[in-house]
Image (cartoon, rainbow over the protein chains, first blue to last red):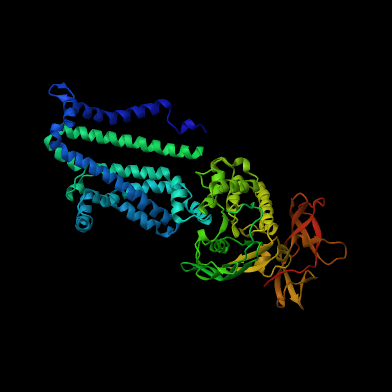
Length: 267
Length: 352
């Protein structure tokens, strides 16, 4: 059978790509244009204002928010890679009968609105506040749960595509400890899933508003709301920068992954 | 680390299973299993799927824990020793090479886990690849190898650490027939040259008979019979073994005074079955075309299959029983031909 029967033609593909591209780019372009507005004309006034030391006090919540969100992103990635992924591997290899239960629990947060989640989380955060303090980083526990369904799907897809059980048993039979099984044998083969899981967690963290706001912690989104009330232009600029940051992050992580595999192939 | 080449393996290890029981939930997979594998011996576990043979192997590997009983290697109880400390080599049915490592990196893995210096690990890894005849594929990744090549590398990887015991879990069953034959000869050659104690799981009786010092026929979580391939084939102790090992036709017979009578032919028995009606297992090579005056069966040819060096012909006796006859390939029997057959009086197994 002709493969052409299954794949759209070159022209169709381009048309689809252009339509989608336009749909994504127009709002972005308009947002960018907005940041240059200066009365009837355009200027770099608002961009300059953002970096003007004179406005430091006005924008300081913003920098706090950005810093907190970055810390939270890293902490959430750590939770995904150190807690979620090994647990999933363990369930697959050692306790396959718990897989359905585990999957159900992992996907649960997606069905619970953040506002409902907060009701349950707030008494827990009273305890967390007493034990770990009220630093913004403690939000990573909640964000780990929020990111769980997305990270789970991404990693599970990789696990399903890899013969994890046989690889783990082969490594065990060759004398590998469980740590070595996970780090040296499974992680390299689940790389794409782990990467996708981490990335999507970063996206979740950078976009999160409800929980941070209701638990009275500052992150990027809450600070944007605060700053927006004083200077809408700056809030928009920072939103754009955050988007750009995510985009660059995506490219960098993708590139790192490719370099990692290329290095392995050379040695 | 030692400098000695792979071929001078350590002193061989014996493996003993003592009254081993294994439950999965409420399902008892192994029932009070006893098995002794002598040092340097090649023993196959043979049986239909679900008979517990793979479970027995996984218990020896430590990939499952015994519910009751003891597993010993060289008299030492290893029942609670985790897999990575048991010093075993294992080849799996599914392709199990690490996809992100080259053939050489795969074979070096076990040595690196034992903290062998890199240069030594590299040299021993190459030796292991040499042993399976694939040193030229050292830098190849698994996805660029055939199934047979992958299983050879897996064998090299399992042997490179000079393990106490080599465990083979149907390693040939995913390969096509020709490669399978080649590789099983090679597995046996390497096993003999290293003198390593080996347990091989298979559901292919021909494979088990061809490759093993002894074969344990398993059924429903127990060993029906263990013996050399010849013993199993010529003197099957139970109906299950007779039916599973080699080909047989079941023929109605009567046991009287320790002898079975089928079509008035007196046939000696294996063991001491009680008198009365029964069925006997008759091998195709023990049925032959009768000469004049011999007691026998009159039968009609149903089908005939040419197998190269010989021919197997299915016949229907006048009383409706079906028989398989093995005879010289030159002797051509056409469908519908009528023949007189007789049974060679060698000891047969009996089913009530």
